[in-house]
Length: 143
Image (cartoon, rainbow, N blue to C red):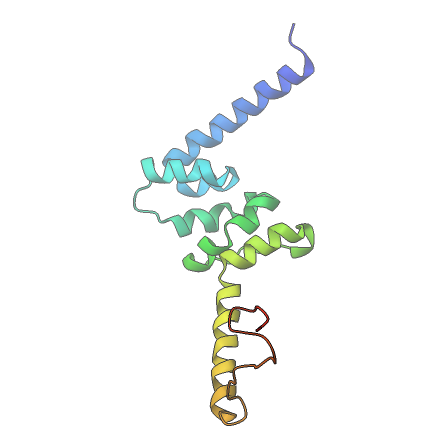
C-alpha cells in the first residue's frame, strides 16, 4: 500500500507530465512549468521562440530567488519581472547592485564630478608636497 506522500508525488508527476507533453506541441501551455523546463522545451521543440518569450511566459512561476537572479536577463530582453527588495538580505541586494552595474555608474558619475570640480577650482586645488621638519624622504629622522 502506498503512503500519502507517495500518492501525492505520483499524482504530481502525472499532472506535471501531462503539462509537459502539452507544452511540447503548444508553447503557451508551458506557462505553468518552471522556466528551466520551458527553456529546454524551447530549445528542442520551439526553436523559433526566443529566450525573452520564455521569460515572459514563465515569469509568474519564478521563485523569490529566481526573480532577483533574472533581472539583468529580463532588462536585456525587455521583460519586466517585478521583485520586492524587502524580501532579500543585504548581501543579496549588494550582489544585485554590483551585477546591474549600479556601482560602476556611481563610480563614473563621481569621477565626472571630481573632474569638473578640478577644472573649476584648478588654482585652489594645486597639490603641494608636505614638508615635515626633521624627517627625510624615507620617513627616518635626520641626524
